[in-house]
Image 1: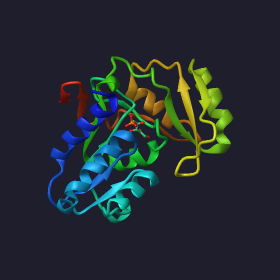
Image 2: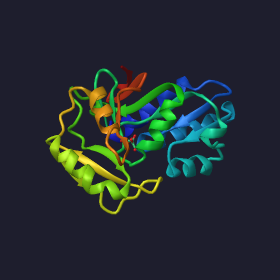
Image 3: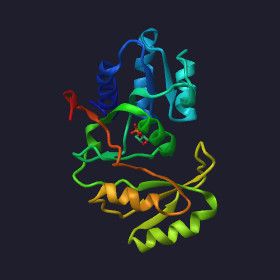
Image 4: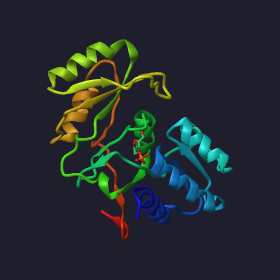
Length: 217
Ligand code: 5RP
C-alpha cells in the first residue's frame, strides 16, 4: 500500500464517526481531502460542514456539500483532520499546510476530534517535523529571536500567506517533550497567532492507515 492509500484507508475509517444530521468540521490537507471525497458519497446523511481553510471549503462546495460559517453552526459534534505528527498521548503537530489557526478553532469548537493519518505520522517524540507558527508579519524578527533563545532555528515559509493574511515560521530542531507547556509558552509571545501544537486540546481518536488497513489508536 502506498502512503496515499494508507491516508485514504484512515479517511474511510473516519466515516464511521459521521452520524445522521451532523454538522461536521473538516480539516485541511491530502488526508482531509480523501475524507471530503468520501464524505461526498454520503452527503445526504449530514446537515452541513464547517471548513478549516479556503481550500477545503472549495473542495467541499465542488462536491455540492453545504459549508457553513462557524459562527452560524454552533458547537460541532465532530471534527476530522490530518496531522503532521502525533505522539501516543494524541498531542499533534499540525500546520504543514498552513491552516493551523482555523484548524485549531474548529477543533476547539468540536466535541470529538478524530485525527486521520498514515502510520508514519506516529512518533515517540514530537519535533522532527518543523513546528509551524502563524505570526503577525510585523513580529517576524522578534519571534525569530525568541525561537533562537529557545535553542531552535526559525525558518520563514517563503512566499506563503495564510488564509488570515499572516506568515508562517517553521521551527526546526525542537525536541518537544512537554507539548502542553510548549504550546502555552508560544501562546504567550506577542505576535504569535497560533502555534501548530495541538496538546491542550489533543485529538480524541487517532486513526492510522497501515499496510494492512486502518487501526484506531
Ligand atoms: C494542514 C495540516 C494537515 O493536517 C497536515 O499538514 C497533514 O497533511 P497531510 O494530510 O497532507 O499529510 O495540519 O495545516
